[in-house]
Length: 237
Image (cartoon, rainbow, N blue to C red):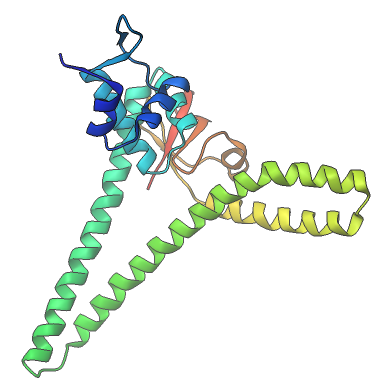
């Protein structure tokens, strides 16, 4: 088994040395050993773990979520489900791109041959673009949901300040914005399905339970209605 320094780990995973050190400080990736001089020493298992962390970060998971998942008794299963869902997402995107390329090729050939583009080709193009627009809309909705979570903490402090300062019109405006933001968040979880990492069952929890559960747009801490297991459940694509 090979050994790596912090710098070598950072280079192999295309991250900064400070990032590897930060993961150590946060308890997500500890070195397997230390040299006599106090230098961190990592092995192949640590390298695999760092690559996994980088992959999970790239699909939108926070460092806190990654740490919680890795500490779960079903961590391997949860990670597998997460990566499976990401494979589905990427496969769909690749399929859409391939269809767009095919449609472009058909149009180019039609133009070159001075022939009219068939009606079916136009319909196929519209269908592909419609799916692409829906995908973009979902990404924007997810970003809006994450933004609401960040704004909630700041908003609470601001609301307290408004009450203490007795600025009632400002409080009314704030409450209106807060209710609107919560509505967006609730809409993003409507009809969302989750996958239980223990029994593999797919379930749709009540909106209230999904909304107030801990987690993010990839995993949430929930109780499976089928097996009763309470753990990080993966949002189904």
